[in-house]
Amino acid sequence: MHLDSILHKNILWAVGWETSLVPKGELLYIYIWGGDGTNGILILLLMLLWGLLLWQVPKAGGFWQQALSCCIGFGSWGFFIMPSWVILFMAFELTSLITFFLIGVFGSSNLRSIASLYFLLYSTLGSLILAACWVVHLMSCMVPLEGLGVIAGTLLWYVGWAVAFLVKLPLYPLHSWLPRAHAEASLTGSILLAAILLKLGGYGICQLGAVEGPLLLSLSLWGIALGPLLAMRQVNMKRLVAYSSVGHIMVVMGIVASGYNNFIMTLLMVSHGLTSPLLFVMVVSIYKRTVTFSLSMWRGWICIMPIISYLPLAMCAVGWGFPPMLSFIAELEATVLVIEMGVLPMLVLLLSMGMGRLYSLFLFNRSMGGKPSMQFSYTRDTSKSEAIFILTWFMLIVMGGWGYFLL
Image (cartoon, rainbow, N blue to C red; front, top):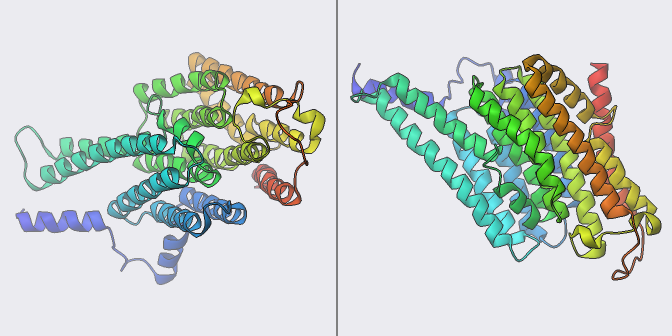
């Protein structure tokens, strides 16, 4: 085969725009909702959370924060429809770059520059490995180098994509950028990180397929076991919620590494995408009244503001999988699959789920119980707009759980 024909074949493979065989109606459907059920569900999640985010976006960022949020939404939508690997790579890197600016410019702390640099460092590392493996893959397809055939190049291409996706998932121990980013990001950044950006890594791993193996499964079980323990030792509320996300995402990775179907993984990602951002909304709502994320300063809310105090209890119940919430369905399906793996994975998952309930109760008791702090002036309970926004989001989670039973 001539070099020009090989180049032409690789360019067609990379671009992937073979649209002449697809009817116009189906082509429009694919470019709006994606080609399969998994990305269709994730695009629906993206649209719901995008609408809720624009409804409650803080005024401090103004136009530019909303513009960056819209760019992340469009980039994520382009990633999920994925007509080609080139467009997927462009959308993947675009969302990472915009998130870097969203954390570094509109962050809520003086340490936001450090958090954004951590995010950029991990993202750049994964992207460089991906680019290097991709170049080697194309070279192996064009010119058979000595000791490097097409199969080896394809394996390197696959490894590059897997590393890039696992960094964004994030897989333990590549998770240290996530708590920093959540702790320093604004409410908009935290919602986008928890609801959208982590799903890019999960969906990318799902699209790669055949990622099961003892190494990834062992790292996933290690992350499942350590996630709740790391969460319980935090004194910053946003970091505590962020470490709880690490445990949930490791369950997703464990399901994928075990070689099971994508439906359970999608159910877990949608459940996490609805519950974790709502916890950040509640944390920021209390922060507006205390101007601190320190757990040592959050005391006695249940005596002074009962409505704003019992809403976090409801959110903790959603997080630990209280029926009939969508998180309960997701954890139930995941538990059934893990039991089939063996005794050790089952014990690790059950221990992690028990620890997750403990740190949820620890979170509520530490922040809402006890004697009120005299350093704050408690002027009002929850506002009407906050109550409507939180209850609307809460109803989406309930409807997701009941919708599963009705299907």
